[in-house]
Image (tube, rainbow, N blue to C red):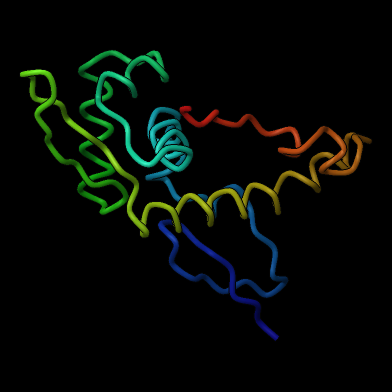
Length: 140
């Protein structure tokens, strides 16, 4: 029987053995800065361009390009607000973006445990609450 697995960009792909590989990761999420943007927004209701730039250590140009790609994919929404006499660009993760990030993390969890087992590592989850993966702290 063929198993359904998540493929690139969240599409389903069919594999005979039901395994997932790193090739199943969504390329839109996988790029380092885009993954950082989605992770930061998943941990916060919204963030300004300045807050994202500071949290991720990105340049204005690179952050703008990668955020635009996520917006075009429907993974983030961009708004404008006026605060203290200045316009601010505000970013929020969409349901589509949250689902894509969750699928991405699910695939990572499924791909990485076999790697850890091959190297004689501890069981996933032994590293602490986040299972050894980095987390983004929520703003207070």
